[in-house]
Figure (tube, rainbow over the protein chains, first blue to last red):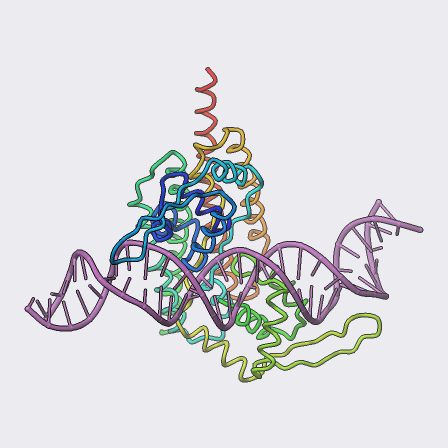
Length: 174
Length: 174
DNA sequence: GTGATCTATATCGGGCCAGTATAGATTGTG
DNA sequence: CACAATCTATACTGGCCCGATATAGATCAC
């Protein structure tokens, strides 16, 4: 899912500037599924504009940079739908935490506990965000539920393992 | 978790060529948590070599490209551990499928069902792979369990939602 | 026997991220 | 009230990384 496609998707819902697209990508409905930075959004909008998939109107502002408001064109809408009609790229779950755990034997126990707590906190945050998210459509409802299911399961697993870890520590301390 | 760090991690377990590192990254113990392509592994090994974090010995072969076998150095091992002692990057879960679902209203019902089935099949594969994986260490056991918990929850969610979807279709067909 | 897969290294274009620059407006805090 | 932080808004750069491609003999399956 490249940044151009993400931009097109967001623009099917409403016109937006590059800045607003970035904000929207960070909202609950999107942030757990896609990401895009300024460094890729602005060039993407440039390219889309050159290809006629979006149009721009410049709103001149006195004491700020001019707002460039992008709208999706008919061609853009159909290119977006086309891209959803061809096979989707597979999901990617990259976890530096799980990778680090594979090398737990090389690290002090204290550091493991630290990583563990940081990871649990992050996951709880993500879960809570999805709990509060208000879906805008049937698809949004589904996607949020999916995320919630995954994060919830991870949290449960962490809780169970945490208990095991404490037991082991307690035994070792005897 | 950059490719250099991934290479170092793998080399803490055994010496390897670039090719072997790629294979190892694709094994059950790693593939659900990290990824790295040839296009990044070879330059990474180059850089590590120049920085003295790995050493190379060239095994000349008659009718094949020479094998370059990399070993981690003392400096490399400590650089790897250092990188695990500093705060880890957050997990990333990118899901083109969930993103596409957010736009289900723009797509034909048939296509939704298709994406749905493809996604379920993929997830089942991943789950099965983790079921069969045999952990090599306590950390490996933990990481595999974590992955299994997440994929399992997603599969459950998909099954439940599938039933709903069929109910809706059936109602619509009346 | 012949086509597919495996071993093995390497490069290139293009996509993308993180950081940085710029700059005035608004909001918050002590 | 002063000063800091955050917000709006665009844009570039260095560097990382992926996917595709090139090369080439070996081995395996049918």
